[in-house]
Amino acid sequence: MAPLMEKIAEALHLKSHPKDPAKDAAEADTPKEEPATATAPTPKKQVFDSDKVAVIFVLGGPGAGKGTQCDKLVQEFGFCHLSAGDLLRAEQHRENSEYGELIRNYIKEGQIVPMEITIKLLENAMRAALEGGGEAKTGEGWGEGRGRFLIDGFPRKMDQALKFDEEVCKSSLVLFFTTTEEVMLKRLLKRGETSGREDDNEESIKKRFRTYKETTMPVIEHYNKEQKVASVRPHFLFSPLVCGPILSSQQIDASPPVEEVYEKASAVIKELFAGQLTRNVTV
Ligand SMILES: Nc1ncnc2c1ncn2[C@@H]1O[C@H](COP(=O)(O)OP(=O)(O)OP(=O)(O)O)[C@@H](O)[C@H]1O
Ligand SMILES: O=c1ccn([C@@H]2O[C@H](COP(=O)(O)O)[C@@H](O)[C@H]2O)c(=O)[nH]1
Image (cartoon, rainbow, N blue to C red; front, side, top):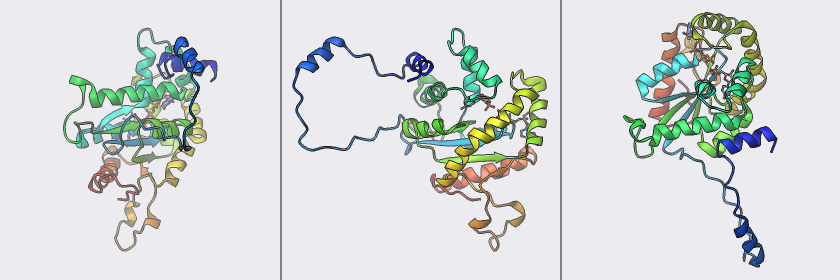
């Protein structure tokens, strides 16, 4: 493991517990019995059971409107909304965080923070929402280990996607919001007037666009191949006679006003819940 990764893994308690040297020595002296038959290694279980915990990834370019749509989906469907960017910013500003400076630099450069940090932050936040005592979420879809999460702005890189699905919780669906760079730039510069975000400036935004195209688009293609990206029929073709799956597009157009985008997003979620979290949702 690279030294940086090793340091991160240690501090976040990701590494297995250090071995007891006395126990190691005793084990070395005991002859090992060969197993009678070779058994295949048991696949590692995820931290959260995807039969009880629904994870929907919300992806799209910087400034497409992911956070805005998530806020509305939370109100209607009782999701817990976890923004990976917000969790990283909170960790960056947490007193005594040893990753503050590292996170700040990655964010300013529009780069993806090493996955161990982001995944651990997400896992901790999910656990708090599911089991956090007085702070655990309640209401429809919650309780007895059940929960529903919108994970916004994650995964941004293939390594994150594979690790999260394999080790934390298998995701159910991807909501993918798209619009042009021109629209996104305009929205982000406007947001930058008040957001206080160090990456809402033209230089950082350009870097974020590059990372999005080079590193995040392959993640969307990966989920598209797995048929997990929700499809929306183009509005002007909406007719049972002309709309077949062939005409559906695997994205939600985020260019129109917020309410119009939300109509599509909420229709996808309604469809998803009606089919009890099946894939290939088309609305
Ligand atoms: N459909 C829309 N029409 C006009 N403005 C929008 C729309 N959706 C969002 N906005 C505005 O655009 C800005 C970016 O939106 P938002 O923060 O939701 O994007 P995001 O995809 O979460 O961005 P990031 O990835 O940078 O966190 C905000 O100021 C928001 O108010
Ligand atoms: O999985 C992730 C998600 C985000 N980042 C970094 O945070 C910024 C801001 O993210 P927003 O979603 O726009 O709030 C992003 O540009 C990355 O630098 C990350 O490293 N990993």
